[in-house]
Length: 311
Image (cartoon, rainbow, N blue to C red; front, top):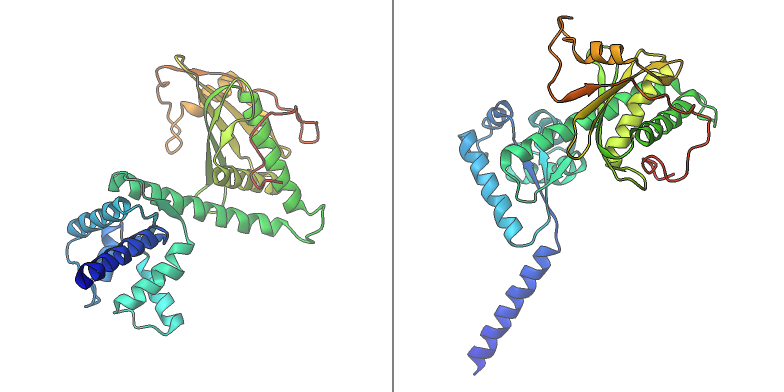
């Protein structure tokens, strides 16, 4: 009788631990790049020798965690950043303890993607995209801060950012219903700053947008406004059962100026690297940009996306 009671107690304890495990989120740091994986092989405590086998093991771990109901975020493991972290924290990098500390303290604080059972290659692409978003936002924020000075209400950087937010709201309000893909490009030293927003708009109500995408888009657009750069915006709209429509705007005096139909066609059908013409995409109509209300004009109620910062 005592043995049966003891066995029941152990089962209850295991059940309680499993329930508690589901309450504890997990972060897995992934060596997505083969070169990064090779860099970690110099540590004797790193148990993997083949990148493909390593990726299969990671995918198995993610599936096992998901089957237990554990919320799992996946981050990128950066060997260079890891080495710096260990040096700053006085940790031996050739230990699993150091890798765990890095994952918990550094990788988990960066861009992550939630594992929902998606294929690993799709997960990796999402991680790379999130990392690129983070880098774009950090660079755009740094550029914008150079335009800022006093930190007062009429600070040029602050003014440009709020104008970028307003421009995004007006662009989506002008786009109307449909599935929208907006790309903002602003010249910068080296590669141009590029930000993307995906939005879904019904006949009534504001467009649904990802807040992070909207924040980065507004910041990049603000950089063009603050620096008087010749940036531009392209909007591609897909309507149910219809053809795609492409429109465009160019930054002019701190606000998007609509391009003509010929300008939109020329911009979309010219190779950016060679300047050579490329054939128009089938199933796509090229239309002029829509004139937007000015930044100081009142906005129609219920138009555009919610404010990226919730202000």
